[in-house]
Amino acid sequence: MKKITLTLVDEAATIAMGKRLASITKNQQLSSLIVFLNGDLGAGKTTLTRGFVQGMGHVGNVKSPTYTLVEPYELDDYNVYHFDLYRLADPEELEFMGIRDYFASKCCCFIEWPEKGIGVLPKQDIIINLTYSDEQRLIELVAVTAVGEQIVNQL
Ligand code: ADP
Ligand code: MG
Image (tube, rainbow, N blue to C red):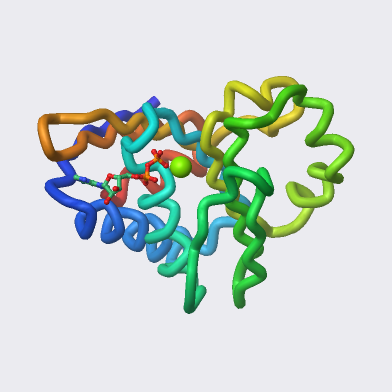
């Protein structure tokens, strides 16, 4: 298990970190990547994912999937799925949405509030913990699998 903690001084730094994760994922030609995002409201989970989605080649808006639970991006190399499970009442709802099909493809999944989907979500490769540090943020990345380590080792 490999762990790294970095300071993100402002929103731009959080976006840049997301883009960096995207470029490592592409360079390493990883098959699928599952990232769990932990942190209080406003800690930067959506901002980080926005950077990742843009780094994977999406041009345009990256809106928070608070009401839709998931926002899909079908990009050149990967299907990227941004989940926000904050409003999920029951993990079974994810089954009804056909979530298994998402994970079957070559995909990158960034999942906010993953604890709401326990039992249905696949195993995470990386756990990201975002915390407030005065006006800034701290990001802790914990690699749980070999795929996760391939990424964290490049940071
Ligand atoms: P979450 O999805 O965790 O609820 P958001 O990404 O929606 O959080 O919101 C994070 C807020 O904090 C945004 O207003 C953003 O501008 C700001 N922010 C993001 N990263 C940083 C940072 N590194 N330092 C300070 N503010 C940040
Ligand atoms: Mg969010």
